[in-house]
Length: 103
Image (cartoon, rainbow, N blue to C red; front, side, top):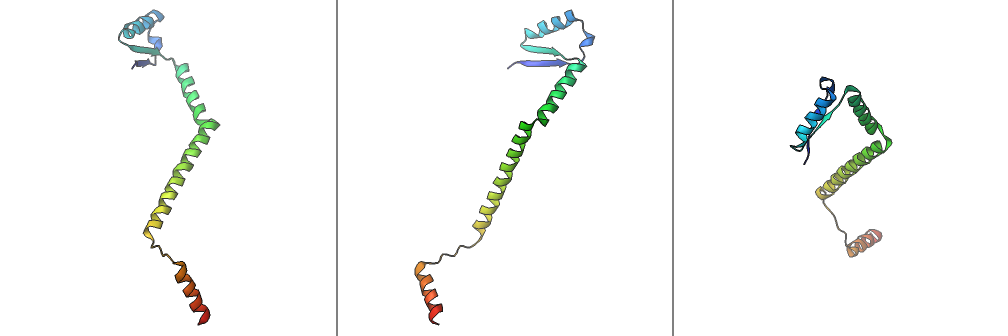
């Protein structure tokens, strides 16, 4: 696994110093990246665009819908398990109907 270091203020180093630092850490399998303020802002803006993209919102809504439906199914199954089930035999039902009709 490659490790990395992000440096937010590259103005403190010259281009040669940045290369030297990158080479020094590269031998230890550590990548060094220098971000200036505009690159950080661009990264943040890209992140916001990702969040606000239509596909992301659709996936989020779909995920929430699945969670809500799952909870509803669990509640319905739970309430069914708690209720008593009455089974009426077809013969009993006929006798009951005949009884009501003849009386």
